[in-house]
Image 1 (cartoon, helix red, strand yellow):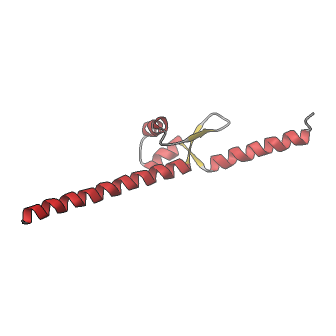
Image 2 (tube, rainbow, N blue to C red):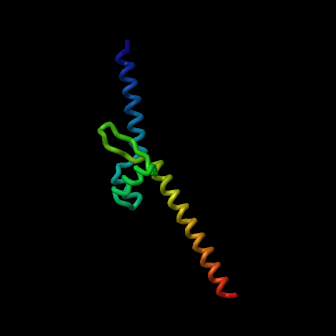
Image 3 (tube, one colour):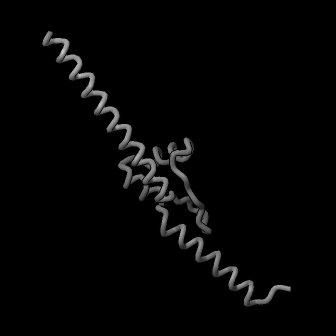
Length: 99
């Protein structure tokens, strides 16, 4: 038989876990603002698996900050690769014109 203290302790643990996840997550609107995109784009990124979410007890969907950081790193790396590729292409074109 479960004691009241055991049930309360388990409930406190669950509440603590939920609060911990909520602190490490943002509402969809907040995530969209941080990423500089629309809410619709956030939904697309969630569907693509590029953003991960959790559900709060009230049912609202929250975006994990960790997944936002990963997406920003990924976007930054792609932008860097494009810039390097552009420099290589530009320098190749100017060298060809000098010859």
